Length: 227
Picture 1 (tube, rainbow, N blue to C red):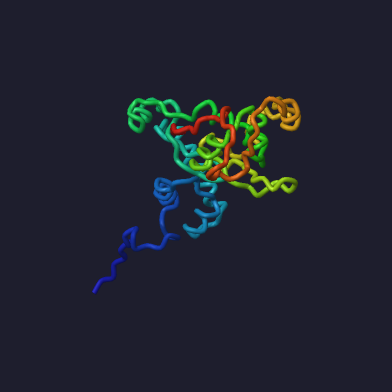
Picture 2: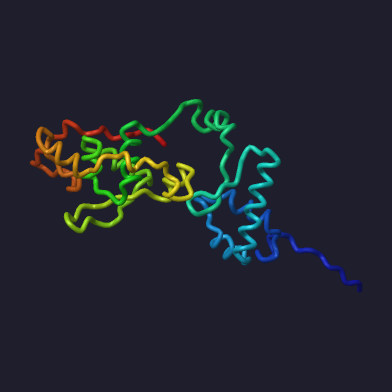
């Protein structure tokens, strides 16, 4: 009786025996957020250095081949993205030709949080000159900002941007933000200048309860468009 060696199907082989690059491609096709090298190394039972090298080789290969997608390192991990030059085709498929984006009010609020973080809603409102409660709720719901503790002096909730924000902006970290912070006015100075003639509100207080009357005449409307 002759002995023959038969290669097992991929589904019956251990992950450590799989071809590395195809395995990485298969995993990155289904992630819903950038996958870190540490996580991929653990799941594939390989050294991190080997994973990092294979990912960079794949990224270079896609560029050389002129593929319609690329592999990027964003927000601390790796993920597939469509190439910018094919954005029009992707938008037609996903958005049916309609452009969806954050409103100007939401973008301004997000920018203040990004450069001032961690920051309270009252300070964001002071910089913008309007109550930003509605827009801040929208940014929270979309996962672009998150709570980051409380301010020691006042107990106000502080907010910061998330990894999802970095992912959507295509940034590896906050250090890649454009150098705009020096041109933003100090919140304390604005608060002092606008104390008089501005309706009183407490952005860090809970939603108004029954019988509570607070002026909302300068509120931003809650943004309902998609990023």
